[in-house]
Length: 158
Image (cartoon, rainbow, N blue to C red; front, side):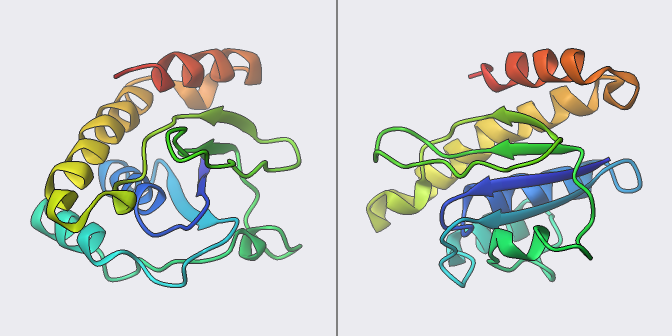
């Protein structure tokens, strides 16, 4: 199953969830992340947190969703947006047939630098159980409607 995680800047939340999926289920899922307006660099605190938690960050990079829209791009089965609402962010919309879900998380990069440890930790604390909840399901065997219901239920986890 191919999963694309989208947000606006592709520097924090989407990078975290991409890493969680890829490290938790190699061979079962392949996750990528992208942004509608990528910053062009992964937030250094994302890299520090992921490294500290044992995730491989060697391939982490901020990229545009345009990389995944071309004819040579892998076909996506699931697209998850992770934009929050406090900053009035507009979540990107992915066209096509993948099952789409929204797992909103506030942007830790928007926090004051003194609060980064707490903000990035909180984003990870929300996203990791959601990823593991999906991986605990037989989602590969689900109909698109059942998968959508499952993704929406998981996205409501606090």
